[in-house]
Image (cartoon, rainbow, N blue to C red; front, side, top):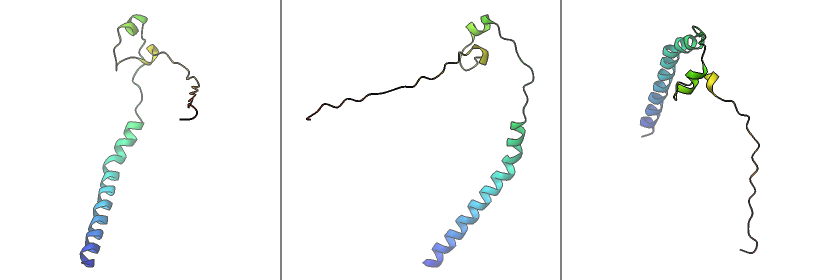
Length: 81
């Protein structure tokens, strides 16, 4: 019984190691290529285009940036309950 458990553990370790090696080999070049992508050209966006833009294709220039405010929440518990 103990031999079967040990053998299963060894097979599991080999499978995990093989999966990690495969993932590293297959996806290492893809991540590097994706990180090196340069924008092909900058596109000028007019106000008319911003008004007609729909989600998810809204240009960054059309999005309004808002600073986050500090939010304070007060919890009041009734006494004697």
